Length: 166
Image (tube, rainbow, N blue to C red; front, side, top):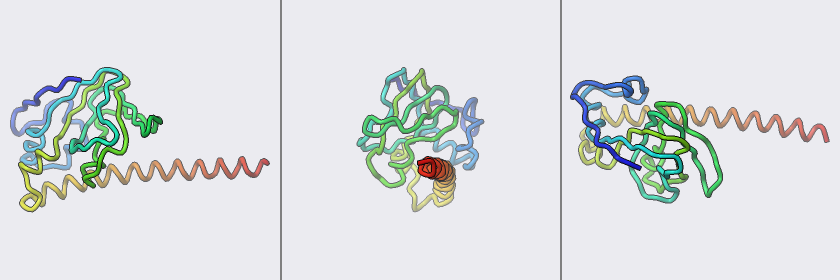
């Protein structure tokens, strides 16, 4: 894996970042702080971007490529849509990484170092930033919960149909 410094012109959001929903939640001053605490991560197929059990405070935004999420070696999901956020759970709860994320193709992510950002913008002094940040993360988690609930409902119906046939 390779890391590249992210250098941007203050007050602007360059391609491909200007199409990512995450950034729409923030005022321009907040965007600059986020981008100053960010860098690019380029991963080759097979590179482990996140290791299960690792202490980490980084949030990742997929720009290109495809990744696989696994827990205890078992595949759980794939990440392939540009703009998808991953790695946010350990930041919210200050917990170790619950799953591993491995590149399945050449991948480029924007990485936001949340610990560095907290040092730059302490929570007690930056309520509007953290309201926008946690509001966005809440929307991401709500969408994932809805998708999981729909899957559970579908699987329960399939299970009932299988039981009824016996």
